Length: 430
Image (cartoon, rainbow, N blue to C red):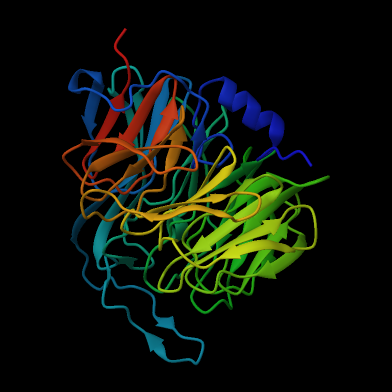
């Protein structure tokens, strides 16, 4: 079986063009084919750094010499503003102690920067005012990563809408899929693009109102919507190629499901991750890998193109938020503290497990891989470099001076890392 991720011609085109158009890159994998990026880098190889207003955990995306990202600027308390109420499956009220934000003005923005210089080219306000729901204090109102297809940039802010801008910053359309409640934790799932569709995973509270939907990239009109019996989740779906068809893979604690990305029709379902699904699926070698790590640790490898058969499972080494990585023949799993495990991607055979970094750290950003190296960016602002392969080898580390929660992007011979306050660009000086 030949596995090609995403809609194959688009992924190949984007990779060849040196772009990073969506969450985790051209194939939604976190893997880049670039070479020559200085890793580790010197101070002179930080080509530019630009202050970004507000907060956002969305990753930068890159297309046509421009970098796009979203951010949320929190303002004053709004009298009478409050979050929607949340309920458990038994009908009792759920009120998370770390849920905040709905009582304040929120300004949600989309920014475009020049990839060569870091200069902000334009800044657009998508929403300004009250919001429908709270967020977890560690989350942001700009966590979903935008996506681009060469015609437009699509920025998703959950209940506050989906917005399409052209590359000059003109608003093409905006669309609402209705109010979305995720237990006051905020949204995180990013849009997935497929053949003129923007696909969104909209899991909610106790699962009664969860759904998948696709809107047309041309005009923002809804193309299809299917109900999901899944509790709240924060994973981003991935489009992968099975034996004879494209499959939209969607994670949840109760089930893993594959849908036809063109129509939303369910193709198969399998065992779920069991606990809060925040890590996104990744695909390779005819398998899709799904993980969760909020308490219970679980990794599943499910066969594509079939009926949801589980090829193997591993119950260690997974993270609460960060997604796994398939690079070459190996699957890499990272725990919240950065402890790294390497498994044979086809069989699940453990090559090494729980390899520790030299200093205590916490991780929310997902791993990326380039030129035989794996990058792990921590909330403490350290970027660790590990040699890819079945033997653990730490190659070095570099400090950015501020925490990293967004996953890095790689395009045009450069590495883009979003810190808490700054967007950094790293590469060789010409």
